[in-house]
Image (cartoon, protein in one colour):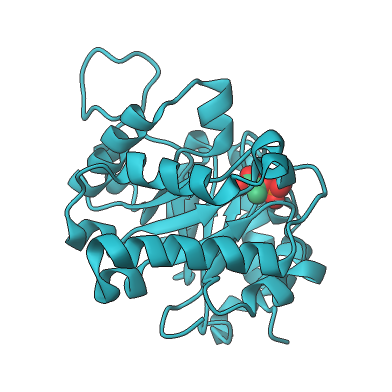
Length: 259
Ligand code: PEP
C-alpha cells in the first residue's frame, strides 16, 4: 500500500469490561511477542469501551507496548452540560491516539448525521486526536449499484470545510454495512474499488500530497484468512476489525498477515 504504514485496528465495540479488556491486551502483546517488535511494518491499535481506557493506558505505558489505542466515539463538545457524553480532551489526556467517528452503529442506532459527524471530526482535531472516519453503504444501496456515490457523499459531507492539513492526517475506514458482523466479506476488488474512489475524490479536492497521506482501511467481517488479500490491494492501507479482534490469536494473525 505504497508509503503509508498499514493500520490494523481492533474495534471491541461494547464487549470486554475493564478486567477482560486488560486480559485480552496482555494476551495480544504476548502473542505478538511485543518485546521483539517484529510487526513494526504495521501499526496496531485497539478501540476499547471508554471504561477500559484507563487500564489500557496503564498497561500500554507500563509495559512499553507498541500497541496504540483510541476510543469508539467522542462528543462534538469539549465540556459542560452534556450528560453521558465523553469529550475529546478527556480522551487525549488518557493518551488516546485515535478516535472512531461515524461508525455505522453510531449512524444507525444513535441517529448520528453528517452535520454532527463533521463537528465531531473538528472536535477530534481540536484535541490532537486522529479520527478514523467510517463510511459505507447499506445492502439496498449496494444492490442499486450506487455505493460509490453514496460513500463519497458521506465523505464529502463529513469532511465539510476541514482544512487540508487536517484531512491529510485522517484515517478513513470503508465499511460496507452489509458486511459488518454478518460474515459477509466484500471481496478484495470491492475494497480496492472503493479505496481508490475515495483517494481519487480526495485528490480532486485536496491534491496528491494530501490524498497520498490519508490511510484508507477496509472493515467488514475481516478474519486472518481474508486479511492478506485485502491488505495486498494498492489503495487499502489497513483493516478495521470487529468480531475477530476479540480473539487475541486471530487478531495477532491478522497483524502478521504477511507471514
Ligand atoms: C466493525 O465493527 O467496524 C467491524 C468491521 O465489525 P466486524 O469485523 O465484526 O464485521
